[in-house]
Length: 127
Image 1 (tube, helix red, strand yellow):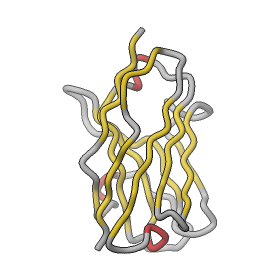
Image 2 (cartoon, rainbow, N blue to C red):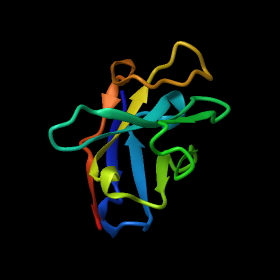
Image 3 (cartoon, rainbow, N blue to C red):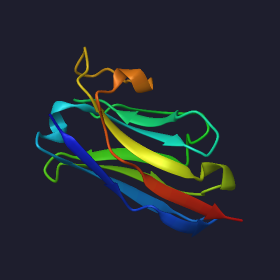
């Protein structure tokens, strides 16, 4: 079992950047496929980005493609989400999630495919 703690959220101006971190403990993050999701007030939780367990294959939601980048540092047991060119519509609580994938290099985009979740970190974008 793994515990996930997100950090790095905050208030940023539109067009600015933030880097979110997801620190894993209890079991190595290298054992899991990892993902980032977000939920804005009154909206469903939505997929943002994922990185596979091996090969570090990545996949992004269309809304963030070209602006966000997911990466993992297995030595630090941490997954990152670099967010650039932030827009007002990116404001949300961002959640880190871990999944035991059916295939080592699979990319998982559905929330119900993930087994473990952090408590989230708030990102606010001012226009």
